[in-house]
Image (cartoon, rainbow, N blue to C red):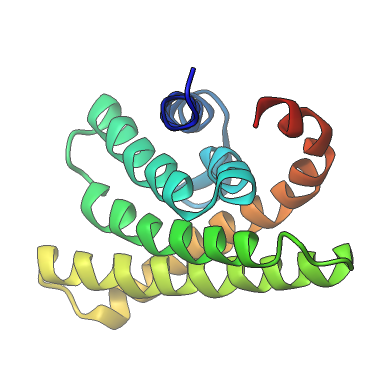
Length: 173
């Protein structure tokens, strides 16, 4: 199998994994919000395959999940926010891949997670929802603070998993 086809197949598996983890493992943390464990898959794909795969897993994973559960509810803002998250985290992972010091690399990636989730969820998702629902952006941002905290937490907790998968992923690549 050539490299491009293999990467497409692996990314499709990541989208499916995002959906399954989001559907099957829902851990409530705030009033009506749960930890979206699909972000574990997105983090792993950003870490090992870069921005394009990370974006595809996050963007398409949200679309498939929303279509299976609630139709278009929540999808436009959430999926648009995942484009930003996948791009930023994927690029930082790619740019820091050759760093000698793993601790500094993880600090850069962790910072990119927090910043990109803030931009993607508090910024992009809130703006899209403001345009769709005609509510003040400050109200949407306040509502999305739960999503920001939970999503950033899941992605940050996923980083040690990425490190532990290093030997397995070398064989897959």
